[in-house]
Length: 474
Image 1 (cartoon, rainbow, N blue to C red):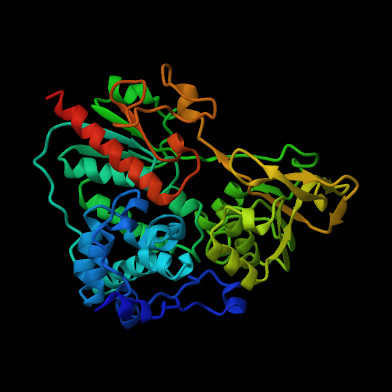
Image 2: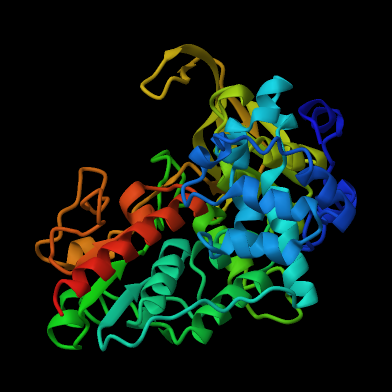
């Protein structure tokens, strides 16, 4: 097929649930490609010799390679190529910001002068992973080296930890994951809603780890149940990986944030995702039945919280962001879905104080209007408050989704562990080893809040560091 013929193939639109229907159910929004759609979309790949798309992939998936197989209808072959470097294709195909990573560099998008018309790499990745799972096509088994007798402790079970654990297990080490919650998966289970990432998919990936021989200790809080240094000094582990993420919510520090009806997005989403508060008939998790909800923030977590509020029965949901839509860090697709479902976007506005009633419950939100000033250090134009522009929204619930900081428990309970001013663990950029020999770290605890695929890249680099470290100590 010539480049001109490839350019003539129209981008394949992903089928979705109707917006009004999906806004009140927890089923997945995007319905996925058909086999013919997947082959058609994959055929748009120019098969560039330079493979520019790969420079945007933190785990260096051979993108043209798997797309060529998918275009031929060899979906098992496509998945095998992806799995050479990525453990979570069904997850990454759903939640990674491909438009800011691989698709940003796609030649097709550049030729058509529109990143939205780049090859839909993530959607094809999702399809081949789903096809293999549904049709039991393609092997998940990977060659495992002879047992080394070395033991590796992995703290946390999010994307970085899953990747690190798998690579260490394949190198022949005995791996145990310590997870604070009762379910494994980290942010994949407590943060990302079912309607974006079905939890059955996460469970399958965890089952894949168990098949590799990885053991799990649940409800085990390192820093409380056991100190990090004790894992090596007393429990006999030869190396430790810390992948505890960015689970400390940030707040606005405004009047009224302690009122009943104010939540961090972390708590709000964890109740619904991990503890299934939306299923009142099947689960006993209590949740606040807010009818008029204000969500503060402009990232993907804010989109998740606002869309979840609709599914938890809210009659009105406001998304309040102090810059314009052009500056929002959320994925364009998530913004589009939220608007379709009925979330009302209030741009260039921000909360000034939360108003309470005589029972100490939220009864309103006083906001202030903003205008954009000069660009800040991030390159985005800074919001500047407009004096005297206060107004009040009638709400009974406020969800604060303005970011997260690194989980502080391990850094504050481990002597000699170097952290930076933001509370992130400092690591060697080549090996991801921390200031403590034999202790490695990766993912959001190192990067700050980032993406699933970036965390996976960190886990892979740390595993390589662990494997080299253990090999040197034979």
